Structure formats: C-alpha cells, structure tokens
Length: 496
Image (cartoon, rainbow, N blue to C red; front, top):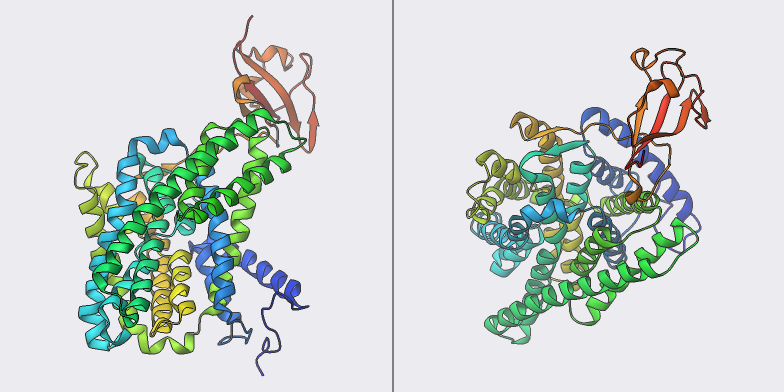
C-alpha cells in the first residue's frame, strides 16, 4: 500500500489539519531550493501536489467541484491583492497596450491555438474526437497569462523593467482572466447546447452579448464598490490595521458577488475595485494592511497549486503527452508572439526587444488549469483529455518560460535591480509627513566627538530611531554614534 493511501482530502476529515500542515511545510521548504536554482515556487507547489497525489504517494483527492470552488476563491484573493498593489500612475502610460493584450491578445492566441489543435493535434492524434468546438474550447482555456505566476515572478525578483513593461504585463495578466473565463464558459455552453438543438449562430450571438454584458457590468460594479469603499475608509476610524484589512477584503467579496448577481464578471469587478482602493484610499497603517494581503496571497497560491497538483493523474498523461508538447511549443513560439506583435502593432515607439520579451511572458499557470475543471464538472466528452493537456502545457510553460524570464530580460537589457528598500523596523508614518529612510553610520560621518548633533544633518531631516546591535535607542543630540549604527530618519519639510 502506498504511504498516504489511507488518507483522503476531505473537509470533514479528522486528519485534514495534519495533512495540510505537512504539505504546506514541505512546500515552503521547497521554495528555498527553488530560489537557489531559479525554479518558480509555484511550479514546485504543483509538483509536490503531484508527488503526494494518488499516482504518487497515494493521497486521494478527486472532488473537481470542490477544487473549482476553492480555486475560484483563491483567484479572488490573488487578483484583489494584485490590484491593491497596482499603481495607476505606473500603468496609465501603458493602459491601452495592457487592455489590448488582455482582450484582443487573448482572442488571437485562442484562435491561432484552436486552429493548430484542430488541424494537427486533433486530426493526427484524434484527441477530442477532432471536434472543432472542443479544440477551440481547449485553446481558449489556455489563452490567458496567469496572474499568480506573473505577479510572483515580476514582483518577487527585486527587478524593475524598462519601457514600463512591468505595469503593462501585470495589468494584462490581472485583467485577461475574465476574458478567457468568459470565452471558456461560452464555448462550453455551445458544446452542451448543440445536442439540444440550439443553432451555433444563435449560441455565438448570445455568447458575444453575454461577453459584453459581463465585461461592462463587472467594470461598473468594480468602480462603484471601489469608490464606496474609499469613502467608508475615509469616514470611519477602526481600532487597528487588522480590521481595515478585513473591511477591504469584504469589499472584494461584495464586488465579486454583486457583479455575479447582475450577470457581470466577478473577477474583473474585484480587480477594478482593488485598483480604485489601492490608489485612492488613505488607509491607516497601510504597510501592515498590504502585508496581510501578501500573506493571504501566498497562502492562496500555495493552496491552489497544491490542490491542482493533487488532481493530476500522471498515469493518464502519456497518451496525450506528444500533442500537449506540440501545443505548448506552438503557443510559446507562434501563437503568443503573433498575438503580442499584432495587438501592439499601433504602438511603434515600443522597441522590438520589449515586444519580444512580452511575447515570452506568456506564462500559463493555475488559471488555465482551473478553467479546465469547468468542462470536467459539466461532464463534456473528452474533458479529461483537456485537463491533462492543459496541465502538461502549464508545466512546460512554467519550466521553460518561468525559469528563463529574468535572465532573458537582463540579456535583452530590459531590466535592472531595484535598490533595497529602507529598513524602518516596522515604523510607518502618514505620507503627508514625509518619507522614512535608513542610513548606516560610517567613519566619514563621525566628526568631533562623534555625536548625533555633530553629524550636521540638513534641514528637513530628523533621526527617529537608532538601532545598535539588537537594541532600539531613542536619539538625542548628545548621543555618541559608532560605525555600523543604523539610523531611521524622516525626510520632510522644515520651518527652521
């Protein structure tokens, strides 16, 4: 018997907390290995799920409906956090480019990939019974870049990209999931409806109208709930950062739920809502609030990728391995580059190298695998093939593109290291008071008796705290300083 065959992933299981703690601990430890060798952490989470799953160590988990629900909840947190940390001033110059990539780019990628699957993989290998609609359904499931993967890689490497590529890629990945999700639902409905006698033309027309309605309603609800939350945060005072975090999180759930009731897209609504809040709300203890959401995002990413890894059945993948690899390579080297260069054709000032790099940031991740669960839940013929192929394509994308993204950006001269942020030891002040910075005392700083007063700091700069070894000291003018002392200073206006 396999080591974990006696266990099953069940919300009512007495062993759920034990299993969860072991898996989470193993995943966190593996991130150290990934960081050393440049392997994306999210890929390792997927692999751990596969290793301990039914075909590995025997842990049983086959509840696709539960997985879809948990994955959708996780995507809610991940997208909302990405929106909170997105600066409108950064994305404004690249707004048109990002929106085109998130809409037209997704459509072009799906159309090209769908045609390839039908002409090559479908007819040669006979997957999906050579169904034209089934081939395009699979293509649109994989047509979006994955927000979790892009946010993790771009923000986790302490890099800044030239030509505003970072904000553009984050905007694309954060806003293209709704487009791919809607197209997936539309084509799935088309597959289900044809046996019932509803014509393809009528279904396509209904799908296009639904797409317009969902995008419009989602965007409108996101704007409304976002500005309402900004007003509430401004008017009320809460006794701690934790309550502000929960209040803001509730706005994400409210915007998503309200958009769903109005036939809009909840993912788009909460992403727009988060951008509005992050750029307009004066949040007390904002740094602590963002840390809360960062922690939640890591937990959701870890949970989602582990869960999707548990669903995978490697023993069922060999029959579709060759077509899956062909599809993965076609998407990376043909469909994605074509969609990027066609979508960005009007923007001639954007250098060729920038477009080339954007083409390579076609990362697939949890989003496509999550969307691939929808046909499985709906009971569509060939859904298991779709899931297995999408899973393989995602693994190949995260392995090849995820591991080479940063080296490629440096080789093309499109990225540079960000200076390390100031170490303020948890101290935070309102933005209108000034900026917190840090400074390490050197021999050159010490004049006379080496006191703080004799450092001769410019007007507008004050020392708030001195850290010496493990001690935090309150500064005063006659305090004697030593090389290596760490000063936390505030830079602002002065009336002297």
